[in-house]
Length: 455
Image (cartoon, rainbow, N blue to C red; front, side, top):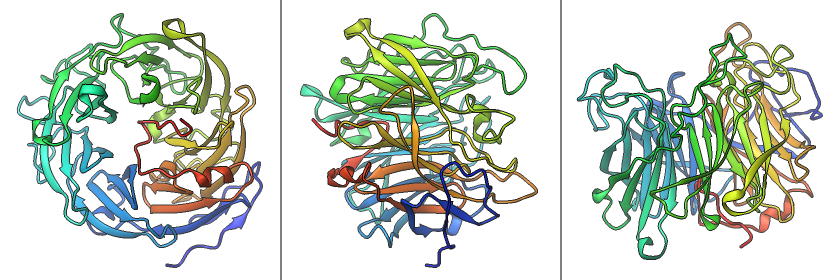
């Protein structure tokens, strides 16, 4: 496959690449790109999240999902493509099961459903479960309806007597009094229990309220100073080995104890009404004594990587976890935002990323939509620094077309990015600071279910 010539540029470069151009730091290389295909090729068929298992990558798309063979990372191939519309088709895998989030009201549970109004009681949204024991021919197994749908979800493996179950934590938000299945205040998540040997038995087992006080009431100020009210969570990241969960919940960041998976307990919450508009996602460091929260200012559809918005909005915020047990608290340390200027026709804001597992270091790869992909070090919580990047130019010089890297994750030596418009990218970073991660091999990775890389 033909790739555009990559021009090396320093990390502090303020030059915006031309349309369809590329720039990167000297330590990062784009190895492959697989464009969107078939029913997924249109501009409105957005690529979304990624999950991994063995030699396969599983990629969500608003029209369904794609399974790639990545046994040869420089030459990935499509194994199967499943048409099953429903935004945003957030995706995860566990054993022979694949889970898909539907966060748009549909006429029914089938993969042939059409859009329907959320004001209709008979409309459906929630979690779909597929059997992927044959990756070339996934089978639809079960649908589980959840209140306000499923914007994202997170898998929590069962332990002890529950070891043959997996729990699905469903995050959803934006209730409305006119929606019969999504009533305010909706300060909750939904917990689905799935028997792994009988996925058809999956069912809702709890709807814990995480913010009994209602959470952040929000501030209805003009953009970019508006703060979201908390009416549910956008994304949850669990660290099962520590029985911890980090919640990015619209107007609040939070830390939870999930030792009882159906009854999460709040340990600490934080707010940043000055610089955080929408708490979007969270990542623990390997020692689970730090959390990186992201702010999706503008909902991912606006240009925030410019001098107008500045360095503290639409950024990451690094918090140290201080103290022990249920007396732990979150203490703010610093913000991190990419330094490269982006055009006003590029949607750019902090988005999905994962750790690059280097023992003794806190290094992360992260998607910034059309801001590209950034590899950065937050070992010193107060002084984060970028150590590598890859970025494309805008999709247009005259209009903002939603695009860029939705998710950029490190898996078994390579960086995989699901670009909203361009398709699957495979990149490699070679740097003495990240090379130790080459020794870490996983059998499965759902980034929102963080593994303990070092035991």
